[in-house]
Length: 173
Image 1 (spheres, rainbow, N blue to C red):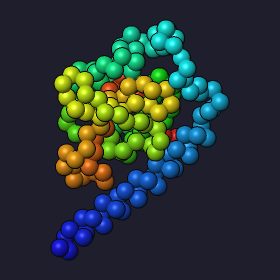
Image 2 (image 1 turned 30 degrees about the vertical axis):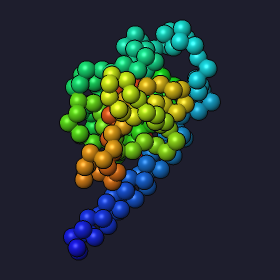
Image 3 (image 1 turned 180 degrees about the vertical axis):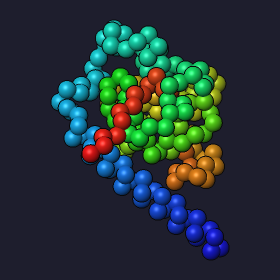
Image 4 (image 1 turned 90 degrees about the vertical axis):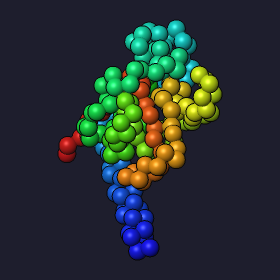
């Protein structure tokens, strides 16, 4: 019983550390970025997206594709900073929420609040939850809950295509 209380307390402390660090990173990001240059682009046509995105990005982000497991640039990447939407540059995930799930795609246990939308996805004969960028609607991947992740503060896995994100390194001040 005491051990279970300790585990719960430990997870609570870990989550508070992650939240505090995330706020610091977001503060640094917002001070270092020109937010007025960023276009929230839900109004873009598919033809405009074809010009902006590479063919592979268009296939995954706009047509809800999936990159092959283990092929993505960020699958094993361990840098400190922010993962942004590759289409519209909106901050989506803080690096401290990334973990190695062994699934072949970058995995995060939570997104930046309000950055990611989710909706039921019954394609390919499976029941899943799709995750998209809240700013531009670009497909990121899927979220899976209740898989039993005990070393993360939240028992969920955001399984994200590397092509859908780009990394911004943490500022060293």
